[in-house]
Length: 201
Image (cartoon, rainbow, N blue to C red; front, side, top):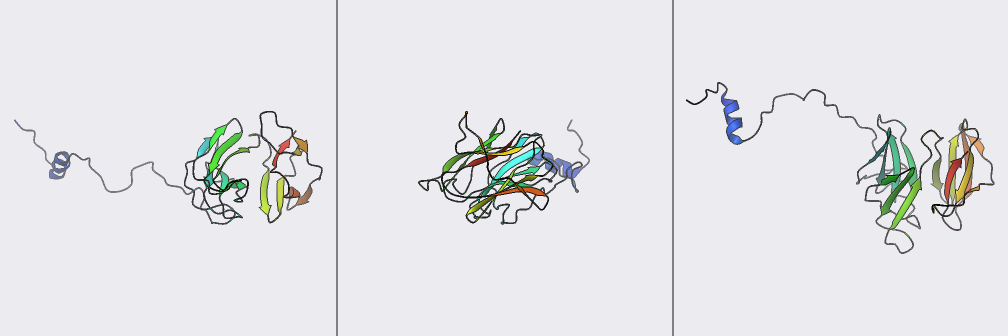
């Protein structure tokens, strides 16, 4: 004896090998835009996936930034705290980051498709501030780089190095900060070898 199916639409769904789709949105689904890229200093055209660490997402935008060569950025899971961590220049640091990032300890690793000393791309690392430490922001402006961090970050000194080897030698930046818009600020000219910066206690 064949089972009786009272709803012809259910029979059609079973015969076609598909499930039923009911009108309306499934409960519990909420789409949220965490950040809309402007194509300016924040970047544009993010192509790779994100890396999640604690409450923070890290990623790259393949274009945009102050040099239009791409950026490394971070944003909290709730959409707050968006910041550009690095703007690619197309020179020694590379340009057009396509692939995703890898996070190890407090250092992000990634690649760029173009730029570098031969124009064929780079492998890069970017040291992050400690989770409980102040945020150091670095922005390039023409031939200078501007570094800013909160004025309430007492006991922290700005340091720099030219190489991020395991036993890198960090030296204190001789120029003291000035307060600009409620932030400690140091402006250095871009000359000589590439330089990395951090805040250290």
